[in-house]
Length: 224
Length: 223
Image (tube, rainbow over all chains, first blue to last red; front, side, top):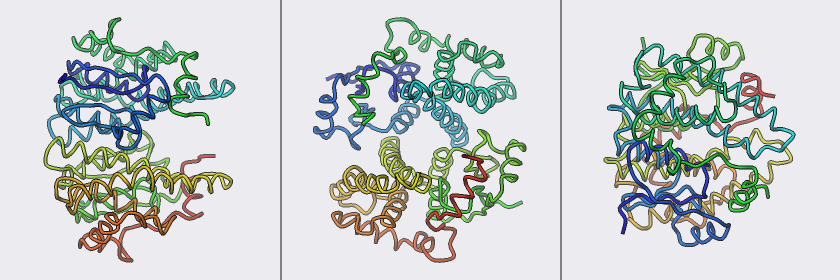
């Protein structure tokens, strides 16, 4: 039996992508089991494998872990991406929670009705450039260090890079006013484990295509 | 200068109530500043006190902490309510996250439009009785211990207690099919710090009313 973590989700980013990023950054190989149909999800639910009937689910160290944040916390702590003490952890948590809020906004774009998409996109850009990015730009400026917290790579850096790249997919020049975020992006992308993850053939997932949306909606019984 | 944590939020439950519960259970006295006007909120933003322009804000140990989960994790870690190792922490996190999902439905309920309220209430009850409470009932039954994780009180127990009471306010008979949770609720109610928090005059806030809802909307200038 493989000692590798096993990820259960659909074959796309969604809520599992930040877990893939963390494991990859930590240099941890993992297997994936993709839900293709609603039956796949129902079967998983019936088997009792999903504590609250939901995915993501990650089999790791003898546990069937659910709840994205719980999984992220465990991986970050296990692989030394969670700071060295309670106060560094507190900063990492604050930064990561806000990134998760931004990720939620980005994730929900695909579910907006066609006539609301433009306005929704404007809101994403507004929040990204006025609420979130300035905070991280300032942290990097004030500290003059390579990483957000404690002068070493942490979960906050990994999640921020993920969010920056995703935001650029929505608006390619979204980082125009943030020179330090631009150099952060280049620097963290060059961390060897992350560089590998950013190359074609890795387990990183592409953005959700319009044509794949019906299948995802069906698996999760959305839009009912 | 006071050493006590200082909570800045509306005078009501919302996202801050879990913080009040956790500090109370840890026997930590705290102060509160209530946001009643938009001016106060705008000033906080202009002062740079709100990292992401949002409350809750908790001033604690020299930090201006925002993001509810970050605040709760810090308090849990500091006051030994987060288990003794990584695996206990993992279970506490899973339980807390599930409870938070249920809590979120209750939190948003007063802000839902009148025509959606009946449906939302039914959903809260359905999720509590079919998705969330069975998990905790089973966990308590399986290990036969007083607390959810590691045979000592943790963040998970306190949040479970909070959500049980919150659901009971909406559906009084909700624990009928859950004898373990009934016993858990009684046990938790009798812990001195929680008993004190459940008494009148404590920092515990009442259920949200129309005044609370209109204050929140006014301060945040949400339409």
